[in-house]
Every structure is written in structure tokens, then in C-alpha cells.
Image (cartoon, rainbow, N blue to C red; front, side, top):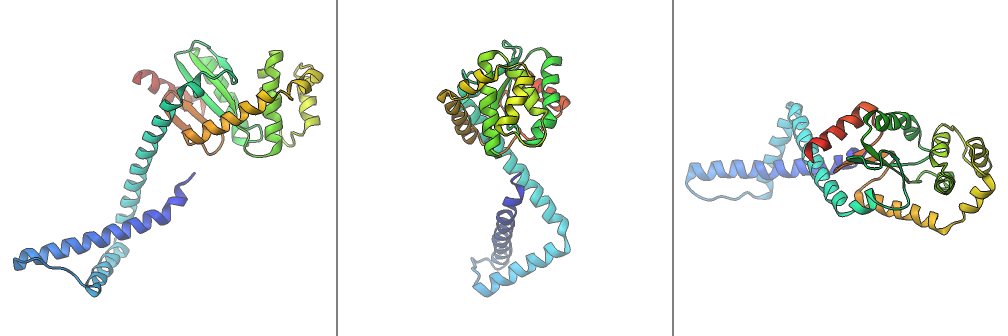
Length: 260
């Protein structure tokens, strides 16, 4: 998601490192050969950089190795930062009082999903996520409305949270995820009615300021953990951005079970 943003920084880092390395290598060799310390003026340094540049142009596979290593190192730093953020915000992620819990409420692994009802990737992933929780039988799935794509996203999220008071959250959640196109208020109410909700009560419950506060807390939490898009998952101590298949979700769950 953010790799392309790193490219200029990575390239400048490589050039800088190679410039320094070239200077040090050549300088050290001359100094060792002549038994004295030496330094380079600007022209000599430019010449070294040119040599390194020509080498890279003739051996571009070296650049690929460097990029791969930089990406590997960055990924490792990102994982450590995510683990620290998850640990620091564990209660808000796993044990808040405003997110709906699906699956086994006493499950040994908690999976937290951040999603948006207008997100096509979320819509495609929902069946796999619920199937994984059902198949495993020991997953505690915490669903967090994270509306970021449009005002309709926020409206749908408010309706879903309001449906909790009628014990109809999952019915509305699944129906909204199955809906393509607009999610204006009139359509949401039609979907809610078809899902068995009392729409007059739903409209009233949606006015609860606690719902807006809950959505705001989820936005704050996403920023703290480093979530920038939907869907995104926190599985145990791992942050897993993007849609995942049932198989991949169960794989990460087993990794977390083994590690705990």
C-alpha cells in the first residue's frame, strides 16, 4: 500500500550509501597502499560516484537485491511498531464495550476486523471471515465499523451499531455487506426492514450520541495502530492489512496459537 511512497527515499538512500561506501573503500585502499591517511576533494568524490553509477547500470540485479533488503528491513520495523501499538492498545482493540462480537465469545484467539460498508474488498471478504470463525470454533471475532470512504459509509455504520439494541446486528451487517451501489438512508431502512428490524426504533437509536462517539474511538484506535485502509485485521499480535482468504486467516490464527 505504501511501497511506492518509499521509492524515492530508498533510491536516495542507496545512492548516498554507495557514495560513502565507494569513497571509504577507495580511500582506505589508497591509504593502506601508501601508508598514510588520505581524503578526497569534490572532484574525486564525484568520480567515485560515477564509477559506482556505471557499475549499477551494468549490474542492475544488484539494485534489486538492495531494494529487496530495504523492503525486508522496513517490513520488520513495521511489524515491531505494529506489535508495540497493539500491545499498548489491547483493551481498546479486544475488550471494548461498543463493538459487536461474533463467533466464540470465550475464544482463545481474538480477530479484530476494521471495515467499511462501501468497501468492495470488505464485501468480498465477509463470507470467508465468518466461515473461518465458524469452522475454527474458537475464534472471537470483533467487528469494528471504520467508515472512511463516504458519508454513506458513516450512515451505514451508525445503523449497524444501532441495530445491536434490537439484537439484529449480524442480520443487518450481512445484508449491508451484500448490497451493491448506494447506501443512502432510504435504502438502508429498506434493507433493515427486510432484515427484520423495527425501522422506526432504528432511526431513533441512530440518534444516540454514543454511536458517533464509538465510531470516533475506532478512528482514533486505527490511527494509533497504523491502520490506513479497509479491510484490516488485528489477529493476536499481528496487524494484517488488506483482504484475507479463509485459509490465510486460519493460518495466522494458528501462528498466534503456537506463539502464545
